[in-house]
Length: 154
Image 1 (cartoon, one colour):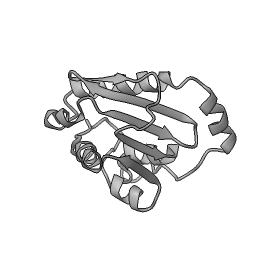
Image 2 (cartoon, helix red, strand yellow):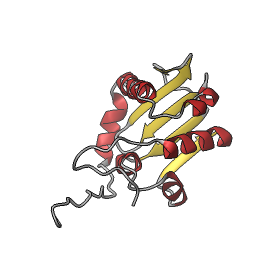
Image 3 (cartoon, helix red, strand yellow):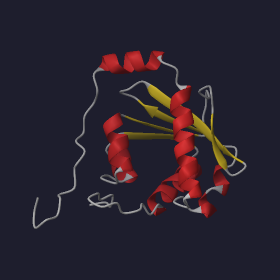
Image 4 (cartoon, helix red, strand yellow):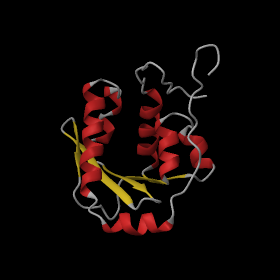
């Protein structure tokens, strides 16, 4: 602690043991999709996601694949709401693949998507234009400031 201010916590790069992914891949995946869709809907209601960015997401299928946990979440955006998909689409419109630490660094804004992509820590597959829309939407999110917590990029 310096001058009464807490240093921001840095999320280290790590990969979970392969056993975790083997076990995680055998578990039901729909709970991940339900939780992610619910969280995204809260972000929409709180107006954290720019409304003008949501229209291009209509009826598109997305996949988040956390490679070192075996967890996968598929969802779509329809009629103004994110909705879970209860089966993984064979060819989603946009797929993000990375290990847990990479997604945590991205969510905490410790690293930006471009850096993670070019360092091959984040794989983005599918519709390039849609990928840019999602990336710009994530960059535009203004996270609320909570006491003792910093989510700004360094």
